Length: 397
Image 1 (cartoon, rainbow, N blue to C red):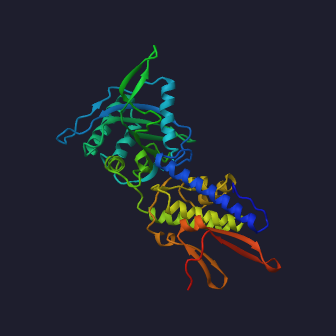
Image 2: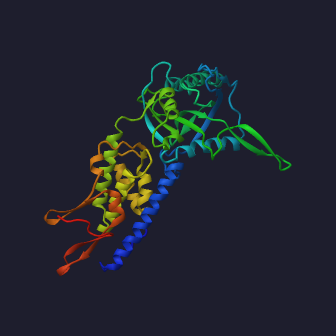
Image 3: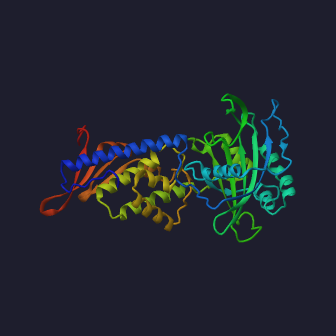
């Protein structure tokens, strides 16, 4: 692991190395927490490759009136015509969104009967262009109805379809892109103010539902023949707000998996199993265990993800081995809602057990900050453990 130096002496130098590594690990955690507040990138929550965009259609939805009445959307009259560079930019926004760490999640399809978003979308991808434009208007109507509060802003309803993966698999996407303000540079180096920008790469004021067919049938069975992943920047909030709920639940008819607590428990147990079986020094295992407790209990994010944990606490080689281990255990690669209810009791204390019933325990953050555990050689070469606590004894019994 990066930052670990094994002097082999088992003495003071080992303790200094351990403290240095501890500081590096804390620095990584601080970066992790900062990134989580702004939406971390670079770790594939749902990697999508070989994406081809076939058709795009725009409609505009509006904030509800002062009386709380739904305002009729403005419907697009034809397919969106984009130059190649503009189409490439749109494609890049979609691909980049589903590489975001804690901002997208695979969900369960709750509504799949007649009139549901997935039923309309499954029909839409089989239509010719004129019917595609006409039929896509139903999504704008549905979104306008789902926006049940004046606090929810209007925006553009972007309906698109295409293929992804190899072999190519059909998909359709439903995006709400909020409009925002900005300036456009003019030819004479002046600026023109506009209030209808959308899909700017930095603002990311958009939400996407990506429905992917299983590829076995042009019209696969609903809902079993489909998977859906939602991107929403609001997912980084510590609590899901109404904006996130109205989009994925009321509009798209999706639910957050109800087995999140069991998935988190499996993440905890399988990660511990990997650490326990890893061919590394005991001191490194201590730091990985500390990292696991820290990631689950102290990280402010509302999701967990194997790649994100590996990136934060492992070097490249160990990260690859860990991710392969989790794939073998069939653990999802995407983000999972962080429901700690199944392991809350286990996370309260970090414990070390030694021969003859000797136990060292304490809150995970205190153990991480104050305790250094090192393997040393004792009498006749026996394996001993050296524990350094950065503090005095406060009481004895």
